[in-house]
Each structure stands twice: as structure tokens, then as C-alpha cells.
Image (cartoon, rainbow, N blue to C red; front, side):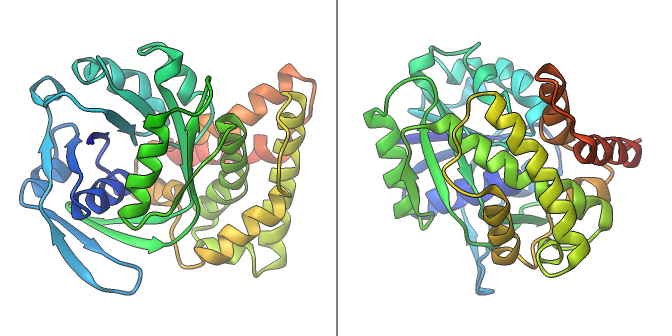
Length: 300
């Protein structure tokens, strides 16, 4: 199996590095900058137990120069999905394309570039933090799932799940990838904006009354929107998010990392998308609207 990873940030580097360590042929595809420059000398990966190792990885800024691949893992920010895929079209000719991103709408964007049968979607609650260019800390272990988004499970999806599991990222194949994406979105809606604005680690949302209230109210609004969209949740989303917050208690959420580094966040594809879809269904989402506006203010 040959794999390309679009977006060698924290999650992309973690998945790409672990796959490379297990012997999978991986190419990291990024835009020119400090991260790509550092990766040319290898990836430094710090495991949850504190052990650090160096991983030799192939990295390029020219997707057209990379050899054909079987699977493309999309790990760019949600707002960069369309432009990243347009730049990477040479890699997409025969590849299955799997989003491992936050937010809603990524699979639908991928379907603009490849047939529905080659669109996969995955979610992960593994925590990853970019400590410095070329250095990723695996901050917390969580669940990972993948599935075909528009069609039934095929051999490529099963092979990807096996490859990730062999690389130490235990992965389950799910029949309903759309539901899995929504369930991850509900977790992100409850955790990301609140931790970014309060500048606290994930665990503070689960071990304080104020944090628990914000998490619960944001998720309850989002769950009502999911129900209106016909999504049947398999778990209690508030309990699921609380478990993730406790499991990744010391992790700094990706949105908090973005705000603290002066970068654009994914608020529009998370809480902002819940607000937009809520309006379509005449569902009020005041907590999500407030969180979205506050993050917009912080970005500005």
C-alpha cells in the first residue's frame, strides 16, 4: 500500500509517521514552509509515554512529482480542503481519498474531485500537538474509525484500517461514516471553542461545573441539529465528549493551538456550521452562536 498525506501538521505527521515506522510507503505533501523544511531531515515523534524517536519520511511540496498512491489521507484544515485537493489532483487519479479532518462538509468537497465510491471518511480522538517544526507529540490515545462515506465498505477501507492498526493506531471500520463524522463533530463542538477561548486543557471541561455546563449546552444544541438532519446517534454525545475530555485531559485542543499561534481556526465548519444548519431547521443555537462569534473576535 502506498499512502500520501495531504497536510503534514500535527495529525497528518502523527499518522504519516506511525505508518512509516510500520513499513508503509508514505509521502507527506505540504506547502513550502518551516514544517516541510524540518521534515526533510526527519520527523521527531514523542509518544504518550514520553519516549522520543526519529522517523525518516518522504516529503514534497509538489504532488505531481510524487509516485501514484492507493490512498490519500486528507489532514489539512477544513477551510483548505478544496484548494489542497485541486493542487493534488495528480495524486487523485486512482486513489481512494479519506478525510481525517474536523468539521462537516469535507467528504462532500472530496466528492467534487473523485467518484463517490472512492470517498472515505475517518475520525480520530488521538491527541497530537506540533511542538516545533518537524516535532509532533502524541498527546493522547483515543478511538479511530474509517468508512466509505457514500457507498458500502470495500477492500480499500478495510486495508487502510488494518494498516493503521498495525501502525499502532487501532482503527475500526464503520458502516455509517456520516454518523461517525457527526459524532466527532459533536465532541469538537463541545470541546474546541470553549478550551480555545478559556485557554485551558481539555480536562478542565470535565472537572469543573462551568466547563461541564458549556460543553453540555453546546452539544445539546448540536445534537438537535443532527436529529433534524436525520442522523441517528449511537451514543450519548455529552457523555462521549466528557470521556474524550478526560482521556485527553492535558491535551491542548487544535483550536486553542490555532488561536494562540495567531492562525485561522476551523470554527466555521464546527460551531459555525451548527448555527447555519440550525437556522435551516428553525432550531435555536444560542450557545454555539456565542462561541462562534467569540472565536471570530479572537481571530480578528
